Length: 333
Ligand SMILES: Cc1cc2nc3c(=O)[nH]c(=O)nc-3n(C[C@H](O)[C@H](O)[C@H](O)COP(=O)(O)O)c2cc1C
Image (cartoon, rainbow, N blue to C red; front, top):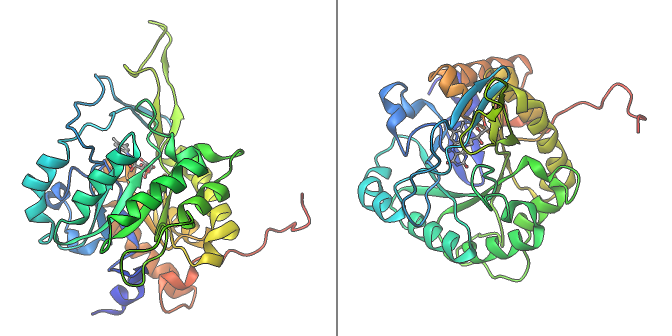
């Protein structure tokens, strides 16, 4: 192993990542399709397309629109459904040369439990990420914006994941009320349930912060929304500072004290974007829109992080998690 690789090795709730840079759900194919353009053994992990119980066509075109500050999508959870995923992709998971996390989207506790349980049983599946934050379908954010509902969901899903790590992907629309700390706490400490596996936490092993921000673009000539669905989710550079703030709030509010790692998501295109997330409290990052700009972006980001950590005089990038200095005017209210 070279010094460059050592410095990037990251522990994410017991998962050993080669780098702290993963490919985000829904932006890198269903499983490992990105291996055509990038050596997956050089990324920290891949998150699958979000899988639902039944196959879904998703929304009609147009469902992907570039904007000045990122991308607006209303894909609508188009996917092949859990049965076909287990049959067609399941046997390949163990052979993917990086950590694989299966993403789950559903609309009821029973639905989430059924899909998470099935993904969790696939040999080689290291973790399951609950997408409780999709703004592109009706009721896609319901669980992610109500701490009580989220706690109930996490408790039930935890029971069917004795082996896999449980990651919960929060929505950015929790800003204000109920607030990201309340939602994060509900995912981490749902209360009541007894863990089913060794060293298992009662709730989420890690949080992913955040998903796309609900948004709309309008064609002023036709006077119609440009997305067929009307509105969708904004990703990319425009949402990055919002996500950084949410990560920092969750880290200082609950994650640091409970030792719950955070995966920062939103607008990572450069190593500096990833470094901001890490200083704010993230242990790793996921890249989505950046892959559309340059599929090799995760490799450039990881390389840049290694150089940064070395200049900062730490042994590993993860030693910089949460190492944000106080603002210049700490007395500001
Ligand atoms: C085309 C597209 C499809 C997406 N599909 C999913 C999905 O299936 N599940 C999910 O949890 N997030 C999905 N996302 C959200 C991304 O995983 C990520 O959270 C978001 O894009 C913010 O990160 P970014 O700014 O790096 O793109 C999708 C995003 C895009 C752009």
